[in-house]
Amino acid sequence: MSDRKAADVKLLLLQPAAAAYSEDIADLILTLYTRPATGQEMRVYIVGCLVLTLTASVLPQYTLLADRLSTLPSSTSPSTSPSSLSLAKAGFVHLGPGDGSLVCFHCCVRVSPTASTTEELPPPSSSSSRDTFVDRFDDIELTDRCGLGAAGSDHDDEPLRRHRRASPNCYYARLCALARAVSRSGAGAGGLGIRRLAERLDAIGDAKRYARALRKLRGCLLGGCGLSLAASFGYSPPHLAAWLTRYFMRNNGACPTRAGDIIALAHESEAQSLLAPGLLDILDIVGLLQLPELL
Ligand SMILES: [Zn+2]
Image (tube, rainbow, N blue to C red; front, side):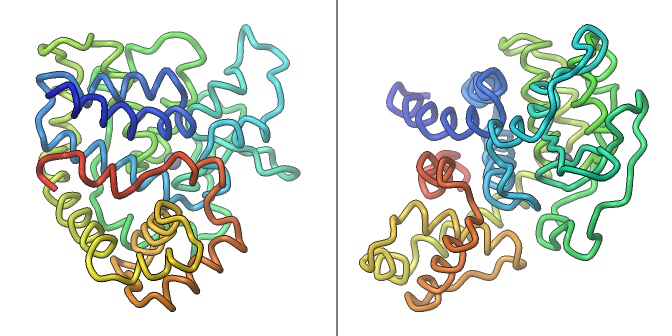
């Protein structure tokens, strides 16, 4: 990877991943992306997971780590239970009064705050909890044989393991798991945990589907003049691209192309704060889609 390409990757991946996942996971994602042994298919897989989790989550208002953390009470017994930071890093939010269960901002799976083994609870609204386009990607199961779950020891690893068991198809939990495999296996070319996990994920097969979807998305964002016309009405092009990406991901690959329709979508997205301003300002979807050479 050339120095310039590496600088682009760092700029485009690191900041949004750090804000949404955490600084340590973002560093691991960057390491995984840039290590020589990581093939282009795996890079497509990483970008696909990032685009999905940054824009298309069920609870997008909690995409940023800080916003998830603000919902979680401090642990009363930090030596024996997961810290609120580890819960937020595993993707969980606490939605207020009720049974106290924790909810993943991306896939909306619910887990009990106290169960040591996973007890998956029904999502709060089954009709809107998952989106068809996201659902269709695949149904691969992550297991602890992938060099992750069984190797984790301290209780701060438990939230991510619990998340993966409750919702093996969650893209947020998957990318976290891949990133953690880097830290467990080392960044060198022979990271067995990463290779095993990639095989288990069938990341190459997934990447082909991701590539088709992401290529279509890039065509929607860059083809025609709708987006630039809409931007001439005062909207930031990266903000428009992020809102269009969310629409694309949650509407079976559909994407408005006329400037008037894009402006209407922008107006609605902004009014509903569909994506946090703090995320919009550091997210460059078009840049991300131009990173992997397969796209
Ligand atoms: Zn999830």
